[in-house]
Amino acid sequence: MRIVIAEDDLLLREGLALLLRAESLDVVATTDTPGSFLAAVAEHQPDVAIVDVRMPPTHTDEGILAAVEARRRQPGLAVLVLSAYVEQTFATELLTGGASRLGYMLKERVGRVDEFLSALHRVASGGTAVDPEVVGQLLARNPNTGALGRLSPRERDVLALMAQGLGNIAIAEKLVITEGGVHKHIRSIFAKLDLAPDDRADRRVTAVLRYLEGTGPR
Image 1 (tube, rainbow, N blue to C red):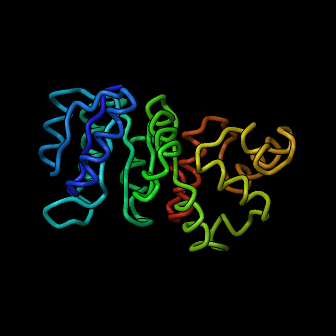
Image 2 (image 1 turned 90 degrees about the horizontal axis):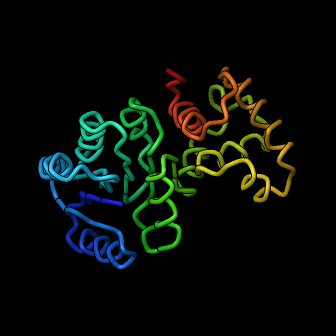
């Protein structure tokens, strides 16, 4: 796995590189600005990019914009976004190109090495990974608005686990219900959100994040 890191915090950037190299992963470049990140992606053609949301010069959304551009230039590039806290507006721009090979994690999760590496591998293999804390905070901010207000408490539990990238078997184990019960809840969720049934993880996470933002499916 070839990885490019874009993070302006020197300690975190070098710490990530050391961690990943210790796991025998190939960190081909570390960068600290959007421009140098895009140049590194063009030069090295990585499998995965780890990108900070806020980067110079304004420390607002430069990292997100750079990630979007990198995915445009290199279709299929996996991106794991890191943020110091939950940013609700990140999803719209990133999801424009689809949610497959996309992850969003809080920086504090990096210290939980197994969880971080699991998310990285999931994204690299074509899946999605959304930090559980992100899902929890977004759901708490939008408890009964729009289409989400039509979901039952159990359906919301299923939706939250779907957003974390869990498959049906893992959801069943987490909620201590049958896999058939999970299928039933998912069918109901799609119906209430006016989405055609689709068992692909990227479509499921796209639905979660777009409805959390009130943008609806595109």
